[in-house]
Figure 1 (cartoon, rainbow over the protein chains, first blue to last red):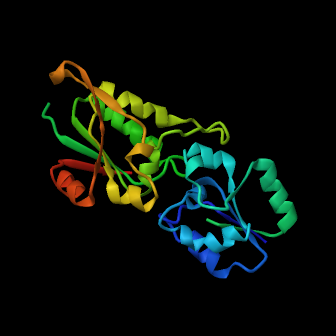
Figure 2 (figure 1 turned 90 degrees about the horizontal axis):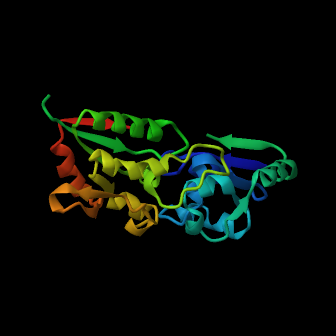
Figure 3 (figure 1 turned 135 degrees about the horizontal axis):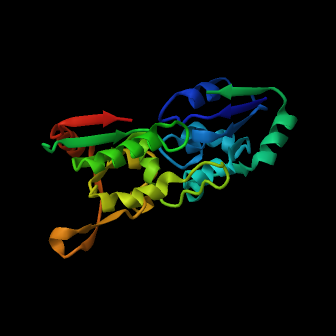
Length: 98
Length: 134
């Protein structure tokens, strides 16, 4: 499955809820304000293990819009819109954590 | 017209909701009425004035550049929550260098941005006549 998160975890608990029930093969893609979760900050530990396993992605355009390209946490993979489509194709059912 | 102290409290990031750009619009309108205006940035609002925003990839207006105009409207009190920056792994050096020219000091260019603790912000807020939250 592909889990998309579009809210900052400083604002809502969408990411925490997602991380709580994500299975061992699914991936997370941060989009819109969700990319704030890709920055190295006081909440990064929430996704550290998933990122180390190569299962956390962030949409590049949204990262650049927020000026945090140089602030990303370790092991976050950036994708463009085409990469977003590839993730949808590869992982099937998408779950949107709004 | 009597001058009042207006504070605009910005707590949201720039592009996920319309709050940030709406706040900036209202701030510029208020400036035209020559009120004593200050801005506070806390929580994800601190992202509004992060340096190096580039919206080419999302097709939205990069209104962060508009913050540079505030100095010319005599809006030069931009308070940023230290705690909010630190939680997000940010510091003052990650913020845009927003400045104004001080007419009482031979038009010297000075920083409009002041990083303050929540304790200091509490005191500044208590001095306000009007506080508008976005």
